[in-house]
Length: 336
Image 1: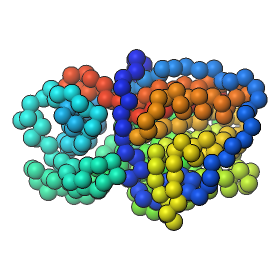
Image 2: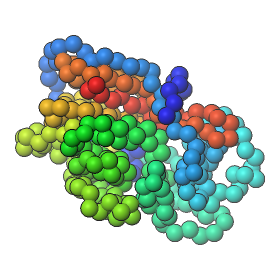
Image 3: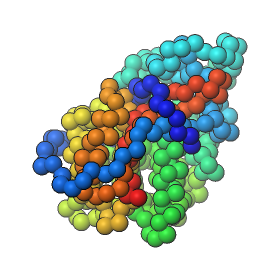
């Protein structure tokens, strides 16, 4: 993990991962009185990088495309932010095993083309010794967002250093890589996603990873509604992960708007932190804003709790020319 000066922001569609896994669906924005107490310390800009490794690499990018290595496969996907020129020649790009084609709009569906040989829907992947399944989806995603590895490493370090039982809540948990990393580190994990398909995939990943005996609760439910119920039930967590979409619809057609609903969700997460909390990590994709937006929100919400809010961008370092591709914004409150 390397800290550098920030690069430009990148749009990335997240809400297509499933039609029903969106956040508060039906919970209107709520406005409460400002928090009393001093704001947390701050650290920014913080640029967290993922470098090429044997399991994943951004091989090249440019011409609004990116060439990636996922385990045994080379994959080409659209990348609107890659407005520069590729470094590798077309012969190298032509070695791709899978190419996402069709509708490439942020909300559109497409299909995969396999130029070299037909491939199955899934294939074995690995992260830091953790086995899981990659999958070709109709929304161009493959089941893992490699830039999140820096957050996973940070969380794993907090769990290990705590030297006590740690409870982790993973909201909008998707295919479960963060949940598996936390469970492997010894945490008790609650994984929440409103998509039955995502939950099934995550449970499959738990089996593939050999972590079936680890304590993970798989909850298929709306993230906001679950968090609100946890407040009423008096449950609490030491680490909370938030990875909401910018926009989406819930299982009953309810609308989620990040700027409208995120403040209440973040407030609710504060309310279900344990007496000895460790961190709350928020990642935001596909929003037209500076990281200062979510940074300021997190500092306001965690006023009076001490700690520090660290904010910036997640980037992937390219293998061909060393250029950085920014993927998302983040802000995380850390107790110490």
